[in-house]
Image (cartoon, rainbow, N blue to C red):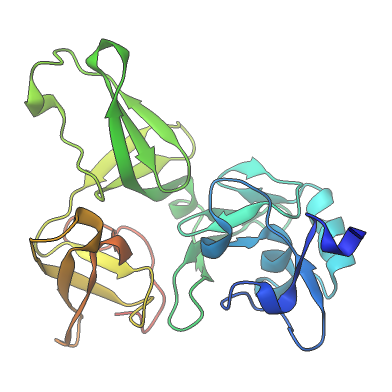
Length: 252
């Protein structure tokens, strides 16, 4: 197989629909490398730098910018132009001290929201699953591939396990630990991560029982009083009473 047909590239027409690439102008696009986010829910860093941040005009220029080590993702310099960037990741441009959070946006699925340096010190991570490890401690499996160990003093006491699947933790990118926890509960603010309501910010009204946890129907209400439905797998809790992150204008 030729170089362009190998693992480094993907046909533009086969790339996820939300990728902002010129499909008719270019036959090939960069393929995201294996990493913290799956290809169908992420963007290669090259596309973020070139097409979303406009720091380069061509793939060659974008690769050069990335290779210089001036782009950080979640506080770490990333020099792999194929590195997958996904929801809630924090991006820093070292030279200009600009900070962005990757958020779902209407119709486009993924976009960048400018944030302050203070807000760039943390990210929100959804708990996709959890397990019990040696010693009865709890390990949380987060949406960005992180595994966080929660130590308990008494494994026989269920009260020490306060974390539920699909709840959200506030993870410090400076200290590397959990700062807060936002459970799935009535009136909690949430952002929709997929479907026709992608990017909308609303309050959780009700979670309907009767089906698998991830596919439960969820009713929400936005700031205009409009109610809508989605499924639990597309709901990302972003605070207790108010969002703890900056959300795009018009998302509410």
